[in-house]
Image (tube, rainbow, N blue to C red; front, side):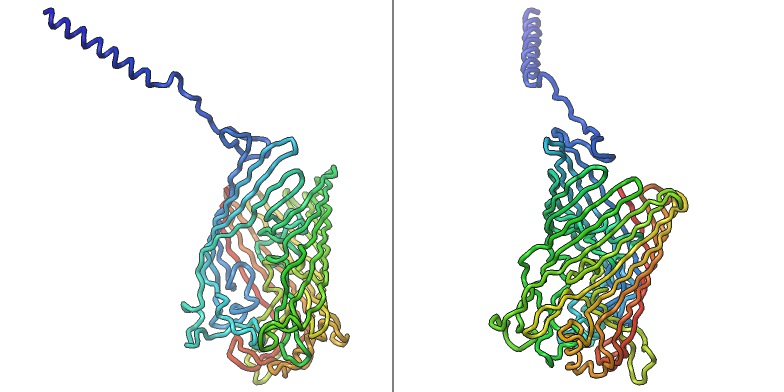
Length: 528
């Protein structure tokens, strides 16, 4: 019994010692859990990053598009393979996209420090690769061939059809103490609606607007009562260079487009605006200065051999653009209704009118029936080009003028349905054909020396583009919208006669005349 008692007492002592050792390994007190806190300083959706005084908001959208009568995004069959207008042209384009935004803000003694990042992940079906184009010396340069790889493979086969996933960086900028540094919407753009006064259509002319952002360094001053002013510089290379065209010596025969001869950039574009924002809406006056810099008079595209530095070059020539825009609330017609309008003038700064997503509208080449039913003609053709400047051998740059405007009105029928009507117009002016040394006379001298244009009876490169559309949106539940958007476009050009080209119905003569095109977009979008 004495032995049993000793064993029991020994075991108990061992257990006490073991539990004491385990207890010594445990923390004295559990650390407090740091919960995510709502940040109400900057609006809905922000919360504090745990352990910091920085607020963050995550947002974005998922979008699905089907575009009828397009071979790219929502711009229309205006040029290239799409402009052929025959059985080699796709009838539609499909696109799916996810957009992801990260917005951070931190209050400091200098004001709010903000960073913003916006990226898109996109998959697009039924577009054409530029590799299907003919050489730069083809009659129209941008006209696409019906046969690829030299083996008669249709462009709807593997040689031409593109289905591609892409990553796009729209915005990536820092804002601090009034400065904006990075890729953001240009201060020249219309406030609020940028390129979309009432539309989903991407290719609207009549105003400059980098909806996907442009690298910039600008400063914005607040004057009070909703008035602010912005001044700074931005990079022109990605979105604001429409081209400098070299037509070489008289008689070289480079057609209506010459050859691209834009030089390396030396100066950024200078931009600024004055903005007024009130309860009735907003209004802005903006301006930009753009340096046009050519390479050399002689290059490998105009003459045989390498570029010839000794040939000299035209002087740099500054262009400019001015724009007025307004967004006006119209509660008289319905809650949330708005009228958006803008007008623009450019001289040697064409992209501030024919914006980057409307690029094909500045180099329009379309085939559409037989204009005027000319005997022997394979079909009709219309073309118009809109560079920043042109020059000829030993001459100076001649700047291209443009005028334009656009607008849209949105009416809300009820909280679930709204309709917008919109339109745009632009005119591209090369000057008078009879004026010696004008841009028009340079182009027409080149056309007169080009064999493919021997049938041209009237030469005048000036032209106009008009666009009109209507869109209806249905939002059955919050942040989910279905929309249908129809757009009509008209090219009014001033050439007459025929041109020999590889086009919609084969190689032969085409009658020059005005052209029309249209497109329809169905879109489903879920914002989050």
